[in-house]
Image (tube, rainbow, N blue to C red; front, top):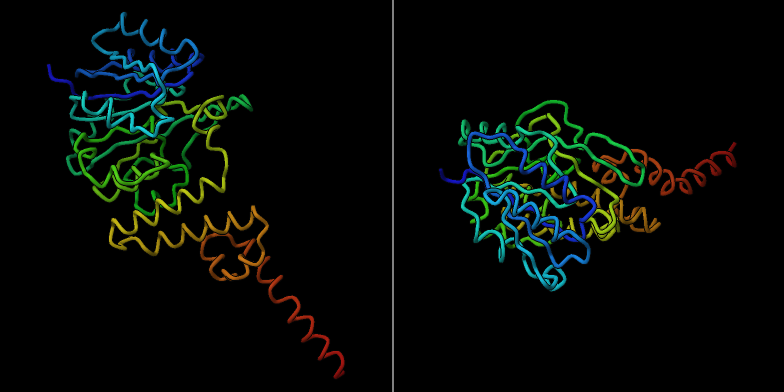
Length: 311
């Protein structure tokens, strides 16, 4: 039987958590074949040993790729160089080594939907955020219902879906433009998927996304201003690739990101230059009122003083 889904898992020093990811893979109940490529990027803990143990136990599912030197630090695309050429599935799914799937029919539900709906290029679902710093669990998405994800939602990127929840058609990775946007892969890839076709969202939480884990993406990329600048670069590049089709939505998001940068840097002058109307349009009403008052307070004071003097 041909492989229906190719899954990939990127791991680095995930020795404490990799078993949860691997168990989530091997415990899927499906009526189709699937394969899982688990890439260890020269971990210094026991991650590689655990992966190899599962590969010996489940050779038809787990396909290990063990590096002896770290590729990420060399700027090498792990996915396109070491994983994608080996994939044979019609669909692709992913899960980082410190995240995991918590429903055994996750793949089956998503593939059933995509097989019935050829006009959709991808299917995602809600996730559970597991915060290791607070020992707390909350839902990732604020969406209340299942349904198509709009381009506005993707551009806003307000907790719509996380990478471990996504299943998409293999052909999406064969589009040259998808390779051209760098940084914050989840966001840039979601933008391109939304431009290529429709994305369906399932409300059921079927994966767990760990945050504040040592060595995780969320810990390595905790600088909010740096992330905001990266998102602005991605949006500018996407705006060019989409020939300005979503310029209004992109401008609104860029304003929101710039406002956050200026606010965190306490740059009142830049906020005043943007103006209260533009700030309000970005969605930050309280800050817009504050900037309006600070910008016009002196003018109002002088006006009132003239009136009082005349009286």
